[in-house]
Length: 177
Image (cartoon, rainbow, N blue to C red):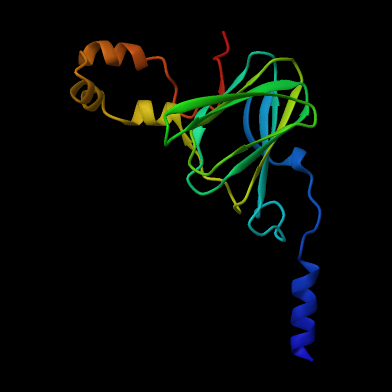
């Protein structure tokens, strides 16, 4: 009998619905923000998660990649270009999408999205419980300037000046003026 009660209690705690609007992930301002849905918000999700992305015209999701998941980018409303780089050919592909269209971004591919209209709404759907993200801003700001200078034969002070205004974990750009 105790097994039945324990199983019933466990099933009673299972969540089958969630409000993504109550799960903020990143907010730049009232028109540019991202909400998240993962196993933390909906404990019955397995191997699936989603970012609910809202962008104003000319806003960009900064260049990044997901080491643990592929991403299906779905346009709910508005329009955007999803750009992704084939890492094997070092060639970018640019896909302009509007309502109802999707782009598949393979796991580990460098990519970014730019909104072409206000009130652009995208959903990034991932085949992982929680998508990991490596941001371009973090790579640029966390790598010591002397490493870039030495690797590419650059003047270290010039490189420091170039990256001085880059904020780590930008996520949605450009900066607010």
